[in-house]
Image 1 (cartoon, one colour):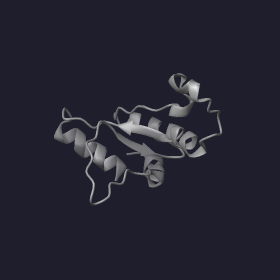
Image 2 (cartoon, one colour; image 1 turned 45 degrees about the vertical axis):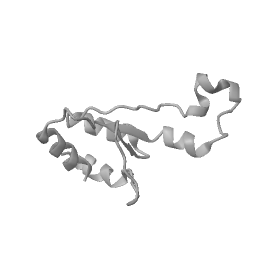
Image 3 (tube, rainbow, N blue to C red; image 1 turned 120 degrees about the vertical axis):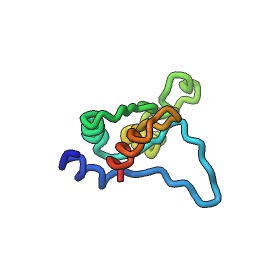
Length: 105
């Protein structure tokens, strides 16, 4: 693992699930203010990552009729610039899971 990735992973914001709740992951989403740099590092480690939510919902075409403008929901907009997802599926091998876990922990 590169020194830059070791440095950047301190900035990762991980999902939190309350004790009394459960979750079924379709993807595991992380956040970072340095998303692009972290994504480059993950790709160098052969971890496929993607951005599932590049634009906040209120700015997507399907919600134009609501007349929201950029700046109306600043937290949503900020999050959409920070989030990216790592693999989370039943087809990952044990070695792949360990590799991904090592990178983010």
